[in-house]
Image (tube, rainbow, N blue to C red; front, side, top):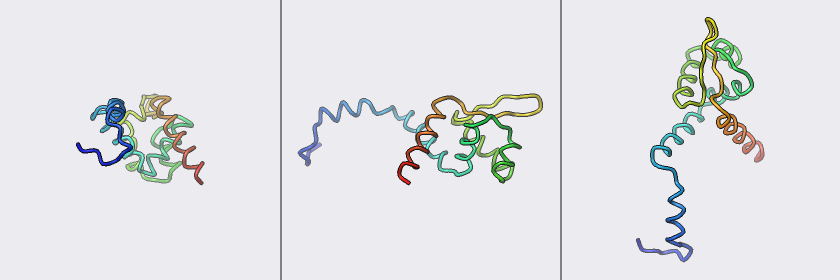
Length: 115
């Protein structure tokens, strides 16, 4: 590759590229960001960040159909952003881990900083 820019340091670029995640990780990260493009899924995450909830609670809080809530939760579960447990006859959803909490909190902080 012919270098056309005097700022290019090929050795430094090689070192930087070694720190780029593997293709599978990049694909999984892209899927997470794609999932966060949905207003409904983001609202679900913000609600679950405050309290574990069942589908009927989410449905009432967001004023959307149970089908839309279930679809959003399915996507979030597939990406391990949300987890589930049974509590009697209820299925309770909750944030998967502190990484997810940090991700949504930092994103909100970032956008509010620019407002």
